[in-house]
Length: 301
Image (tube, rainbow, N blue to C red; front, side):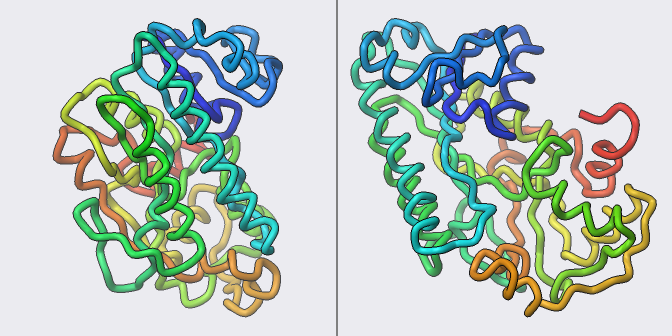
């Protein structure tokens, strides 16, 4: 199969490109510059300007995966908020224009999204059937991103609502692991807030699974079937790193350092992958203990 990935040089996109290549698929990365593949010569990389001039590289695609957008892992100043939102809308709108110009359109686009669309709660359980209401900055961004994806002219759109993606090569986990490596790890805030997570290898597998199954469309929660509290996550991380879990970090410290973004860790959400499970997807890493042992032990992905 032939896939194009927008955002293929990022943490999730890079893992997806490697997984697709190992599956024998052809991968094309769409980047801001033709050299945006980061030295990965085995993957053809085209820039948006290249595609504006000549769309033939995208003819014959089976699917496009759009994961592009500025990282939310930064202090949310007013300028940062505008960049976070606009980067997602701009790329999705460009993609819609390019697909409209293709003679042979892919049948499916998997467009990035996030579980932030559900808002936060210590008591609610969310799956894809729950209505969404933009109640804060992040849920508003994700809702706008999903609406922009609706304009992409293909038969099927999958909106991949991603949780905390666990992997050694990027994302939030290396930052979260650092205090433990320094023997200063512990719960954050109350420790009771839910963390809905997924192993990076499972999210790559899930993306391809969604593409292969025409019955899967609309929102798909990219989270493992066993969310955990922050305290339980910390204990599993401590065990994987052979470190103590003993030094709690008060919520006000996080708020002082990270501002509004601190709510990502201080106010969680319990999200279940109902669509993936009902369509027969089997997680290789269904529990956080297994996922973290895989990442920090032998034979990790």
